[in-house]
Length: 157
Image: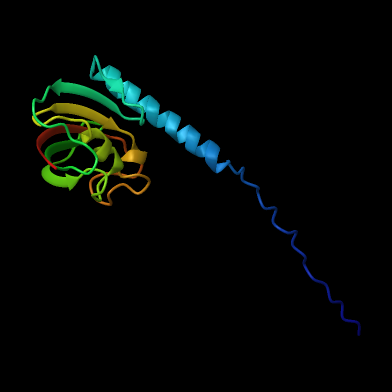
């Protein structure tokens, strides 16, 4: 009696190679998409007179202030109303920070620096200067640009 041993050999699964995008190129693409989103917001809300501040943010003065001008290292008290660019409200609050040193979004430091007491302005802040990749893990989704309506109340040196 002869026993025949055979095996079934399955062909190896072909691994489908996924294209890998260069991380720098992916970031450039995301920044371009976010810039387009901000530009569309400016156009749809007819924010005539809004200007880039050179940090990637856009600022629109609403009312001039007449008090001290906030500088790096000053303690400031301010009111902020924050929105996502779909106009849903994130929150409204009053806070005190030391410009350049407190642990808040970098965009907020840049927006408050140079404001005068009593000044009101609208600021559009890209996500990389707001809550970044993770969002705030509550009301701000990941990679979300924000709108701040700011009022500088007091500057202390």
